[in-house]
Image (tube, rainbow, N blue to C red; front, side, top):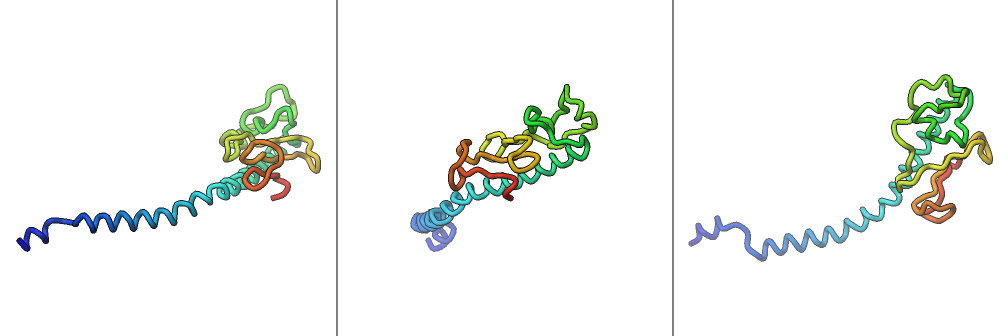
Length: 142
């Protein structure tokens, strides 16, 4: 009888203790991980803005001007047709469409209010203004 007990596996109580321990650990860890997604999206948006700024500077080096507001950030992906100032455009300056981590398009205005262009994300809510994750992120403020 002792041999059967040793080879029988785990008891129901042992399995329940392990499940309770995993549940307690999950209850402590999951909220801290979920709370960081907004912060991670903000950091990703800032990184994207820096990347787009670099692409805009490379566009300017090749074509001697920044894309116009009419051309928008699309000028970094495909050669603008009907714009003679983009005659030196040879390859895409960005690998993908410029969308922020919340799925909204980055905003580009040229000329800008305080420089050659304004580049920004409207945040999680996709509307001007806001606080926290919904706040606007401007490339000029990075």
